[in-house]
Image 1 (spheres, rainbow, N blue to C red):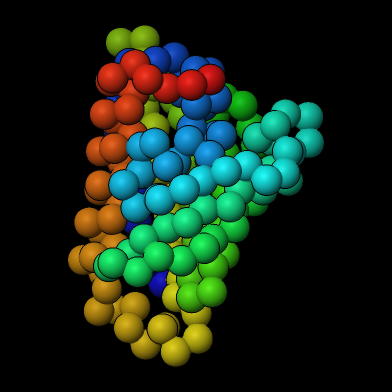
Image 2 (cartoon, rainbow, N blue to C red):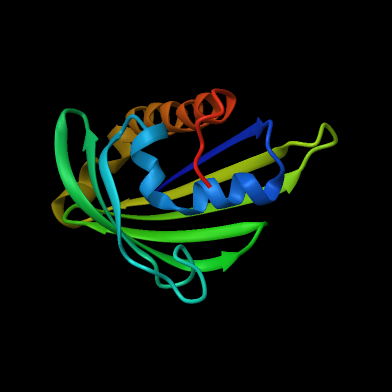
Length: 152
């Protein structure tokens, strides 16, 4: 198991930040490790609500693979949890949003990554690569917000 934790402050109120990030099809815009992302099923009560399903093509260390993410918790505008599964990995992404004194939002992102099958043996050796992947993703998110190109 590898736990990645990153926090950023963005210049948008919590409702806007939440609405932008909770639509996980946006990951292909801000996460350099995501090649494609699309919502393939809408959630309950909101397109990105509980039960929303996303298909992502991700790349890690030069290899592409498919993952399916499902929204399992949806508490606008404070918290969303998405659980992803691929052939070699499962991921639980917990994203929390809180207002800052400056009128923006602090986004706390935690990813619990677990390799499956024989790949489990290599997980302790991949810690630095996973950390770098997490830093690149959160920096991509920060740049996306700062550029003002989010879609809500």
